[in-house]
Length: 183
Image 1: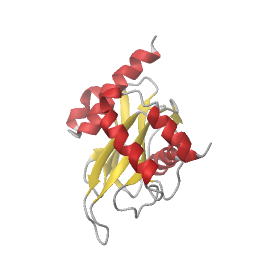
Image 2: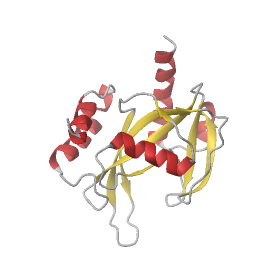
Image 3: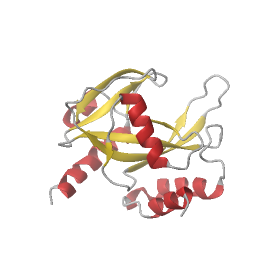
């Protein structure tokens, strides 16, 4: 099975049915746009992100994104790769200096958001595949050149860092993860 087919199956299995409209948008892009993993596919392209949690699931690792000026999860472009799981892991390592492990092969969250025009690049959409990961919070992260800061943030204090709905949604989903892991 190809990576594109694996991604389509993962999208079909996406557990958050209340988000089916977003899932269907992402699925359509993957099915209909052969270049959806290329950074210069201006109708939108697939990106991969890491929702990095501490081992006890009480903290998440956020970066202060240099270009966007927002506290967000690590993530980035596919650079042509249909391996969204690998993209998310690569970006996590590049942007934090840590080596988290995937908690599941399942897609944890999907988000479609606009990236403003910058230089020669027009405004475009990121179709972001987000995967839950874990690493020991005692390990000190190292900010990359793509961020102004990096921090372990207690989930209970997330609103002092960001009001970004997609990040707040992942915090809510983390509460469900904690419940599932304790059963």
